[in-house]
Image (cartoon, rainbow, N blue to C red; front, side, top):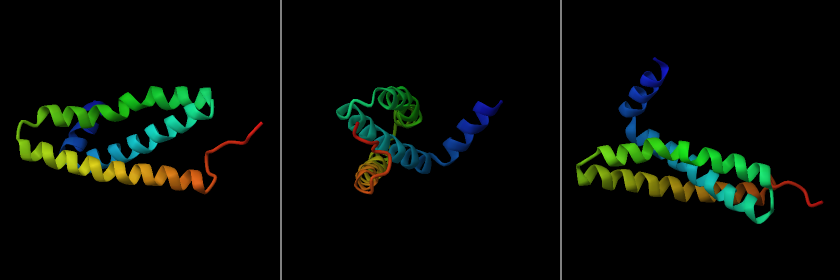
Length: 103
């Protein structure tokens, strides 16, 4: 089954998966906040709907890992990814990408 193959692949690359999804999730969450501030209802709805699905694998890894050192490494990887995700979102807005037009 495709889902099992994807989950197996993500398990083999746990830190890479967590980093990538945390980067995307943080970028996405910051864009979600930006969309709310600017009343972009459709974009906000789409972004909000996708966030829980992007967070799920990282949460499952964290819950499944009983070793505290592994959990700390997952937190460190996530923290680095979130710092980059926020920065990338701000750079996107500064460059005028994905910010819409005033009516």
